[in-house]
Amino acid sequence: MPVLEIGVILPSIAVQERDNLDLQTAARHAEDLGLDSVWHGDHLATGMPTLDCMIALATAAAATQRIRIGASVFVPAIRPLAWAAKQIASLQQVSHGRFILGIGSGGGAAQWAAAGMPYAERGQRTDTALELLPHLLAGQRVRLVDEPGQPEVELAPAVPTPPFWIGNASSVAIRRAAHRGDGWFPSVVPPSDIAEGAARLTELAAAYKRPTPAITVGATGVLGSASFRARDEIAARLSLAYGIPSERASTLPITGEPHEAAHRLAAYHAAGARHVVMGLAGGDWRQQCELLTKARELLG
Picture 1 (cartoon, rainbow, N blue to C red):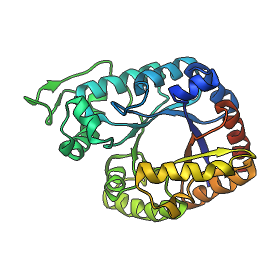
Picture 2: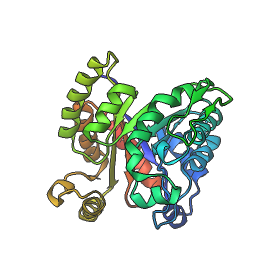
Picture 3: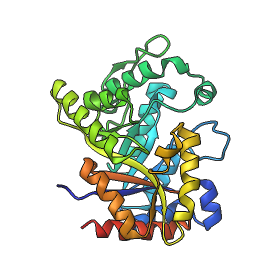
C-alpha cells in the first residue's frame, strides 16, 4: 500500500496575525518539515477576512520549491469559465506543475449572488467546467456553452492539466470524480464513509472505463497534550457549519499526541485514502505542523 501523504491548510488571516506568521513563512515551514502539500480555500463574501485563493497559492508557490500547492476547493463555476481557466493556467505555470486543483460546486448562495452567478446553475456549470477545462488549458479553441453568446475562446500559454480532485462526499461528487476526476476529495467524514465511497467510486469508474481516482480526505483537529479540551469546541463548530449531528461530529476531530493522531490517520489510510489534508483548528500553527509531522513519521 502506498505511503499516506499529509498536507496542511495554510493559516487564515486571523491565525497569521495571531502567530506573527505570513504565508511565505508558513509554506516554507511546511516544506522544510517534509509535508507533502499546502492548501488554501476559495471564498467570497463570507463575512470574515479571507484571501483570494489563487493569490494565496501563488504566494506559497513562489516561496517554495518542492511541496505541492492545492486549492481546497476551487469553485470554477462561480466565475466565467475562461477566467477560471486563466487563473488555473497561471498558477500551474508559476508553480512549475506543482498545482493540485480541488474542484467544488459549493459555497453559500450569498457568494454566488456576490459573483453575479446563478446559484441554481451551479451543478450544470460545474459539469461543463470539468468537461471543458482540460481543452482550455491545452490551448485548444473551445466554445463556452454556458456563457452569454457562447463565445469561442483560445487561451495561452497552454499548460499541462493539473490533477482534478473532486470535493464533497455526496453521491454527485463521487460520480463526478469517477467520470472526470483524478481524485475524490471528501472532508470531515469518518473512515467508514471513505470505505463505502471508495467501493462506489471503483464501481462507477469501471463503468466509465477509467482508472479509480485516488482518495484524499480533508480533516480537522488540534494536536498536543491540551488538544482534548478543544475537541468539543471543534465538534460544535463542525455541527453548526455542516449540519452534522453532534454525536457524529464528536468523532471527527483529530486530537491527541502524535501517536494518537497517527492512529486516526492510519484508519483513513486503511479505508482507502492516499492523502490527508489537515486543517489545524488551534494552537500555534508552526508547532501544530511539527506535531503533525511527528504523527506522519509514526505511520512508517
